[in-house]
Length: 275
Image 1 (cartoon, rainbow, N blue to C red):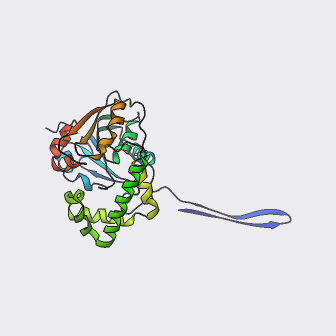
Image 2: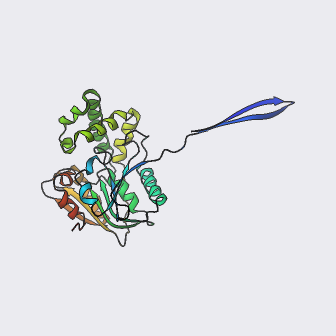
Image 3: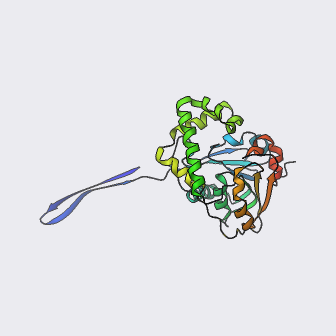
């Protein structure tokens, strides 16, 4: 924070400024976690709301780091220490700016998970970046206030439970069975630090995305993945209308389940050759 002070007085009918005070809050920098050799091709993984940071990618990281330099942004408002939650577009801009600052112009693999798919889609719209493969898993690319309201109540319940019971609260939710104790602790810290006024912003932003009429990425292979039992399948009509990538429905799987339970198969479905 930069501070300057203005102090003025009236002298012989004129205002004389002796001091100048202006307070500017500098933009906070998004935190990025990186894994693997920087000389390898880049894999950019953008997390969901329920699995902040790298917590949802633990089974994937040992596989990817053999071949890729993996970058995981910690989205503002969904990280710890907690920053103010910002819009999908602003999240994407911060990621793009970081890539530019680090002289990264080529992404070999872009993965967006659940809410992270909307940020990944914004990055796909940036034609300055060369992207080989993009996978959007359990995409929430939809404008639906009612679904935003449902997500708000779900998040509110989980956060209340976590504040009361700590990491033991996660035993009450099937989706957290994949996380180790350390990652549950991190999720707990994230949820406890989410301010009340930010909670609605997070929930409604997740379902406040309007797809363009077309996505033009000439040299990018794009794939959308849905679990057969996933509520995100409600987005299928919009995705089909977009006609900008392949669509895969994973039999008997729920929201992001395939990524956790069959990581090798998931990455192959994303179009990666890991041999």
